[in-house]
Image 1 (cartoon, rainbow, N blue to C red):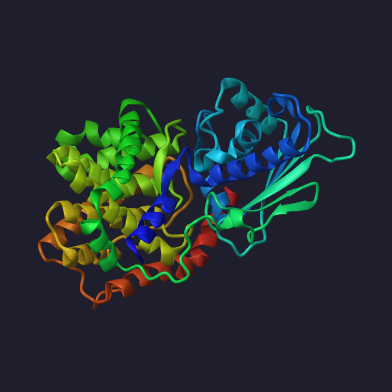
Image 2 (cartoon, rainbow, N blue to C red):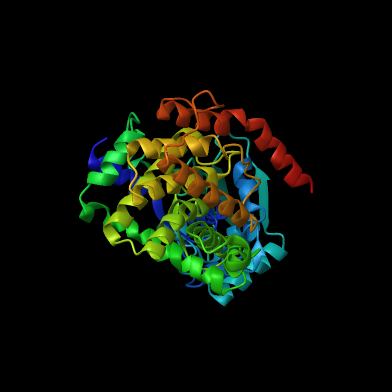
Length: 443
């Protein structure tokens, strides 16, 4: 890949997201379908606040798993139904993963809650091979001026990426399919050939002015961390770590990083209305890939340029691992993200390429088996665990300690090790993924 290819890849995978990205993907698909109805029918100005919607949402099992128990921004509620209703009432698809950021008024939230209470939102599991899939069908049964010749209904389909709309339809007529130019705008190399060595070289040598945009990680995710520490969100994991720092956790960089990172996750998973800078379609992954490095920069007064290079390294390592793992799986995303942040810490501590590879291997030999049992406020505990392992793995790597290739899934070749992690999470844990979903649905 050229430098420009890598920058395009980062910009595609690192972007702001308001709320957990699985319910947000549902809101995005619904918003797009509602907008299609607006474009094709004469409507009153506030018709979406007044319409009697029927929303039929078919999702993949992984979307359902990650949308069942997570807080939806500004509502005090959890789950896919209210996210879908908000998409219909006030979503703006042009904002992508921030689809709800411009419309969360009290009136819109109240109307969305009314639609949910009235049973207007129907969620089902789609029969699909895609792990990330949403088909949102929006029908209007009153509350708008529609032509008598047109039955106002539309759908939008999202596949593989949280904001990748691949098909739309109005009144049973396909408007756009994945073969159109609109679906091909994203950078998708014909052959993926990125390696950890490429990532290392790019992070160290790319012109600073080309990569300084990554400091947006600090702007968004640090704001979430401060909100989590100042408020009472979720399980208050980050707050508990910081408030018990002297007596229990110690006044160390590890506890500081754990507290800040978990606090950001606390706020986000409980429905905070601040956006996160996501990574590979996950806000929690974006938080975990960046906040330990940002914590290091705050504690040790790191300048912007080395911070940016560490964040580029961390984000790219996570994107690289996700390439083999897939956007959604039975493997907890904090495993991937904390592996990236471990590499960033190695860089800021003066380590080289060999130490970065050792940190990745140490992480692979430590928490690879951590399962994802859905998005929820408890994710902050897993985030804290991931950060602890990231710091531990980095410090061991800097001392020349690395898990041996005779151990478990670790191999001498760093790329083979990463592919092994991906194979375990994507193929090896399929049965676990199905069982987790069954347990969650039967509670």
